Image (cartoon, rainbow, N blue to C red; front, side):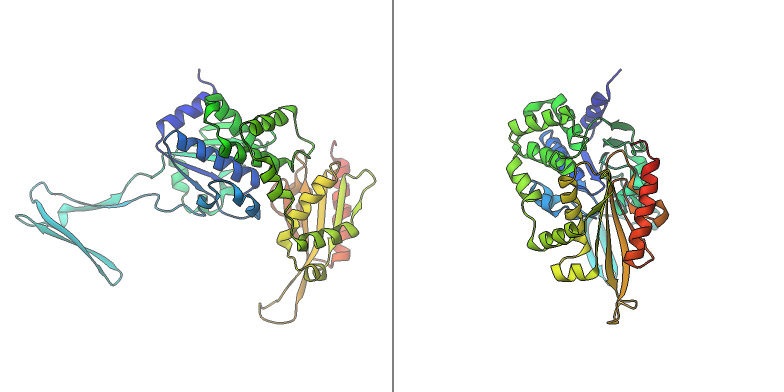
Length: 387
């Protein structure tokens, strides 16, 4: 009986055109690019497609990043067939008309009738899908929603390290002991041939591990993960380049915003829950936006490793009609939780969106009142968890 690794490579061996897709995140981007570079060495045609929905622009340094597409295009060809059993063709031309494409076919002898014409679609362009670091197909967004039939009719290899994965593939390689999907991809490639891991592949995989573990500062880092990182560095993984772009290139605006978060930082007595608040004026004075808050969360994760949950409660302003100068203030919650805690479940009463690790919600109350409501709710739920 074949192992899962052997089954994966049997599927890859049979495939010619492979789609790699994922839910947008640092680890997913990096592992997808590494896998793409590896598969190209096996002479496979590879396309990397993902709905871009996050601020992972710092990983744009990785080889192949610019080739990531935002949508699936031309999955099938439309075919017009002409029966030439009784009538041969001497010439074919086409003309563009208004909202029409006219094909002009000159018969060599005889004539064509409507019965000689048929139309249809070809098979799908890709014959294998590899999905990385994604809990379910719906999470792929428009990539899945626009072409669900393709995902149902094409074999799927599902690679992930998260317990929330729903096992939607024909082959599900979910390693819960791995700290990142990049670590899983390394083990797969390594089992096939370490000689195929060049500096670019090693750099992508190392970047994924660093992004997922906040430069190996999260509390789920294992000896195996550190050994993998060491091996990737020995294979040419450019650690300094990765760290410089991910953690040493903060803009002055982000540093100012970080300072305001620190000035109001509060925590429970055991530091399991850490939170801070930001007014809409803080964003104006630091020339920053709520999109910059993920960088602030990263800094808090690194600086307070004992924190299990980090909450940023902040104001944004919107115009009710999109044009009026009168602004309406909204209170929002950005909630990060460590691997063994579900941020969505923790903030369920606020109708959050996002993922198990990073959830966002809008709270219909002024920020001071919202802060009290949120913290009381989070503390109550944390106290009931077996931490």
